[in-house]
Amino acid sequence: MKKILKRSLALLLILIFTLGSVWAVDRVLLIKRYDGVKPMESFYAQEPGTVDVLLMGNSHMGVHADTATLWKEYGISAFALWGGVQPMWNTYYFLVEALKTQQPKAVVLEIGGLSYEDEYSDQATQLKNVAGMHLSLNKLEAVKATAPRERWASLLLGLPLYHQRYSELTQEDFEYFPWSEKLINIKGSYALYGHGDFDMSDPWAIETVAEISDKSLDYFMRIVSLCREEGIKLILVKTPTVDLEKYQPYSNAVAEMAEKLGLDFYDFNKMGEETGIEGEDFYFDTHLNLGGARKLSLCLGEILLDTVDLSDHRGDEAYASWDVNAENIDDGYLLTITQADDYLDELLRGGRAVLLIKNGDWEKREPYLSFAKELSALGVPEEELLGNDSGAWLIEDSAGGESGPMGLDFVIDGKSYAVDFQSLNAVTENGSIIYSFRDLGITLLVYDYHCGKVLDTVDFLHTQGFELSRS
Image 1 (cartoon, rainbow, N blue to C red):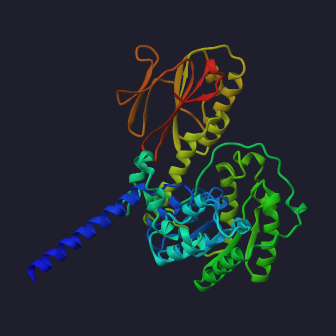
Image 2 (cartoon, one colour; image 1 turned 90 degrees about the vertical axis):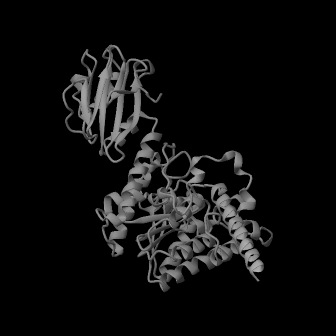
Image 3 (cartoon, one colour; image 1 turned 60 degrees about the vertical axis):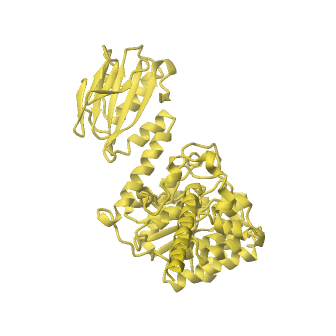
């Protein structure tokens, strides 16, 4: 009897070890898509009952709605739970999954997913819209709706489809475990930097009403019913797009449905005056850049406050992760900027210190004359920037105002910074070199108070016409 018990226990331990190993390998090899997978994995890390607004749909929601703006301007604890090219059935099962741990007061649904007419998405889209979900009966139902029967097993398990990723692994791949601390600070939205060259068409000129596929309509109505059963305010939106020929007929169809169903629908393509969105607010494709997303989110925030009973959670320690999310989005965006005027505009949003260094003397002519005028918005007098001497100025708040006097030694957030144009030809922090001058020009060391460090160092070199560059 004892031998049987020992063997049974040994087999049980082997089984537990085997399953645990497979689970750990799956966590590492899981494809870390920023659309579909990361939003869902991060959602699981959120404290139960803290998400007041769910932003759902395809990439036109995940990229166009900025959770940082909704939080910083309105104190709205929003989470963008979305997937790229996400059809309505995947959105439905995402919502079912979300309601296991959260009780949102509102769901904002981007209706672009109603434009997909195929019974199944392509295989890559199938994977990213279910791979982030934990194994459950709900995931099984999602898989069955997502793909034909022959792909059910591989999609449900996931590992058979991404087991070959060994050669692609990075540090990030080891950060998607239940105990990973960073995931709670991710709220789903994704920021883009860059400006497309688009002309804005007239949505009112497109009167065609699209026919929505039976499958899409079925899952849309499931979302409507589920929200009503749970007492959740459902708000339908079509976020701005330059691809109006594709999406406007579906917006027209949704406008008719919303009226019949008694739902709120906001076609932001027809609300340009309210949002202020222009062609330059789009990325190089049909998505909004972060500048456009911020504009849209300001408008969306006003709508949410007017139509939903929401609390302002700013200052509440239980919601501190939304502060971190906002900081991370804004910091990450700053680091992607490549144009001088965009960079200065971002600094003028405030919240950072800037050590502005002028290294050298050159003729006072264009393009420096115009650049000096732009720099003066940060708080350094234009006449000082046009002076003959090298020097540095500390701007304690990049929102603009006044800088301190020209000097070589400064204190930022308790740290000592020194600018040496002679022996070291460098900048030091507490005695250690953190930057060495590359050439004559203007250098900005941007200090972020939230993360407590120099976040970015950029040069505007004389030999490069004062274009933004990083070493």
